[in-house]
Amino acid sequence: MTRPSALQVADAKRTAPPAAHRAIQMVADTEALVDEITKIQSDLKTCLDQRPHDKTEILRLVENFKKRAMSIHGKAVTACQTIRSGR
Image 1 (cartoon, rainbow, N blue to C red):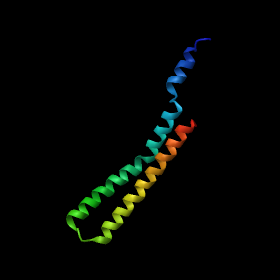
Image 2: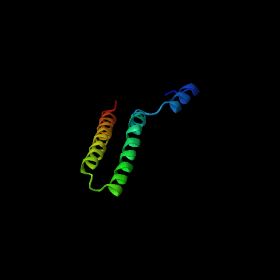
Image 3: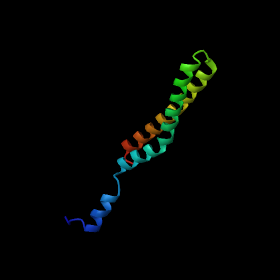
Image 4: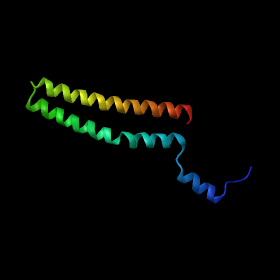
C-alpha cells in the first residue's frame, strides 16, 4: 500500500469528514433560529413579569417559540438521518 502524498494529506486536513460536515451545516442552518428563540424567550419573560394576564400575547409568544423549536428539531432529525445513512 502506498503512502498518501503531502498534497493528499493537506487536502484531507482541509476537508471535514462527512458527519462533521453535515453537523457543521446543521449548526449554521439553525443559528438564526436559536437566536430567534432566545429573543422570544426574553420577550416572554418580560411579558410574564409585566403583563401576566395578557393571554393573547403569551399564547402568541409560546406559539412562535414552538414553531422555531419544531423547525430546529426537524433540521436536527434530518441531519441525524443523513449522518446515519452515510451521505
